[in-house]
Length: 66
Image (tube, rainbow, N blue to C red; front, side, top):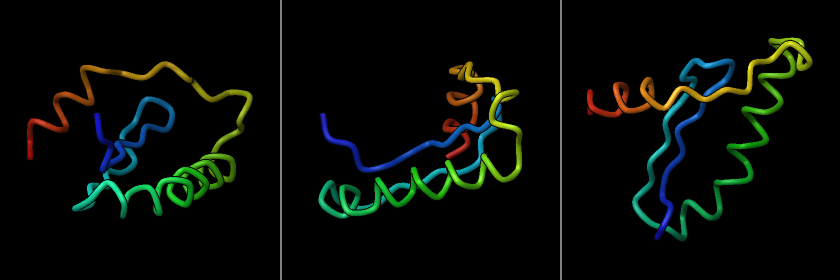
């Protein structure tokens, strides 16, 4: 399985979706995207109070719009 995108959740809310054309391009971006969202979430929320439960149904509903 090849990954060429990322659906980002922060506190059970969808914060972003990135899809790129190739696996190689995504490999270059992956760490940068994760770090960026991790830093944003720490700044915006108290990390100890963050809810780590991912809502799979919300992800499916969001992706069906595309």
